[in-house]
Length: 243
Image (cartoon, rainbow, N blue to C red; front, side, top):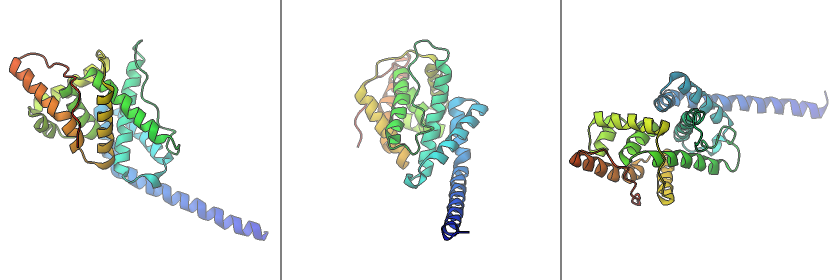
C-alpha cells in the first residue's frame, strides 16, 4: 500500500466514525422530544397515522438540517412539526377545493440551504395568514396556543377569562373553519406582528409577547359576546403592538 493510501484510509475511517457518532447524537435528541412532537402533530391532524407521518418527516428534516446552527433543538423540532402538520391538513383540504390558496412551502429539503430561514418564515406566515383569514380572535388564540404550542386548556381558559369547556369548543370550531371556512381580508401589518411573535415564541420558549398580542382582543370579544348573547364577531381589529 502506498504512503498516500495509508494516509487516506485511516482519515476516511475516522470521518465515517464521526458521522455515525453525530447521527447517534441527533437520534438521541430527537427521541427525547418525540412523544411531545407526536402529541402536537396528533392534535393538529386529528389522526394517528397522519401524526406518525408528520413525526417521521420531522425526523428526516432534523437529519438534513445543519444541527450545529440550532441553539434550541426543542424549539426547532416543535416549529418544524407544527408547520408539517398544518401543511398536511391544508394539502388534504386543497385536494377538494377549487379556489384554495397554495399550501405553505415544503421545508423538507431546505435544512442546509442558506435561504432556509426565509423559507421557514414564509411557511409560518402562510399558515398564520389562513388562521387570521378564517378564525375569530378567540378561536385563533385558543387554536394557536393549543395546537401550535401544546398549552393546557386550563391555561388558555385562564388567559381568555372563560371556561375550559368553552375553550375546547373554540378549538373545535377553529378546526371546522380552517377545514372549509370563508376567507376574510387580512391586514399585512397584523400578519407581520403575529408572525414575529410566533417565531419568537417558537425560538425562545417565551410565550408572553405572543399571549399579550392575542389575548386582550380575544378576551374582550368573548366578554362582548357573553354580554350581548350573540355570535362572536370576527373581531379583526388591528393587533396592538407588543413590547
